[in-house]
Image (cartoon, rainbow, N blue to C red; front, side, top):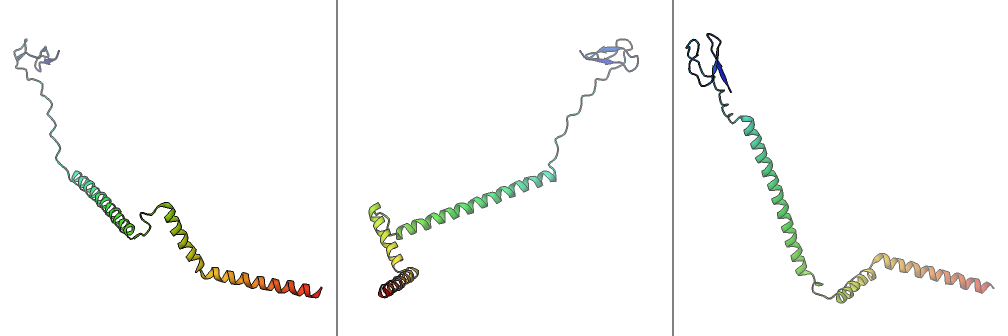
Length: 137
């Protein structure tokens, strides 16, 4: 239980007493602690909120650009599929077409034709050397 001490005579009185029981001096109630006033909004808080908002906007714009790029790539892929002649073919038809395409590419290759000419010349030289050795014997 709380109490009030008289400032004049020093008697300890009950908290609900308005005057001292010994000297009848008015007792002042203990002052209640002041409630803290709420802090005002500071410039630092405003700066932090502005930075967070700017960062969120930056992230949003980056994700938006990324999503736009993905969407554009997807549209491009769909357009290329429409132009693709192999779309809708069965696997065996696709393999035949692919094999034919590669065969034509290899057949018309400059380096392959040069290689074949080199092999033919080497075989002729080997035949000539074999014939010359058989002629000496």
